[in-house]
Image (cartoon, rainbow, N blue to C red):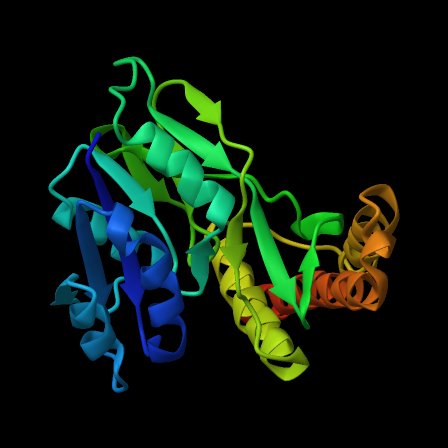
Length: 253
């Protein structure tokens, strides 16, 4: 099987070398779709032999569907610039490449593991975070709102057990800045869908999110990092619903 590794970028010079080093030798094609980087993203991509193309930002869904349309092979591995293949996942792909998958099979899912403050997080809401990343291009499309796009895939999926590594946040300030960004995009998407939120929604949803991640999913086993993650997740949920209520009030006025 021939695989096109596809990713979207914007000022990812600091991440891209690690990402492409983990997969370039497995790729029959590297496709990078950039939305206007001003750093060395293009230089790094071309050093690894990637086909580099620019596209004004279409939103996460539009951008990812666009990069899929640029791939020329049947099989696509969708990877983000702040991710990398673990050694074990590389070994899985090396075993798969010489094979011809059953025609009915549409893709493989795999767990994603986040490196947070120097620790691999293996409990709580963040793990296993199983995602379909290797799939037949003609059976797949991305869908969703302004944030947290999802892959819609037709046909059966098999499971890989090896991790896709995710180098997500530089520090706590970066973490919270992204929480704020994603919370606003989520609230805007929900308002566009006509959703509303009651006065207690920020608190009840936040409390449940903390309890689910830290207790039910054993986030406490990740030590201090598990405590911080549960707290950030709860704060982000509370912010989502506060912003949705603000947008609802603004529209009503």
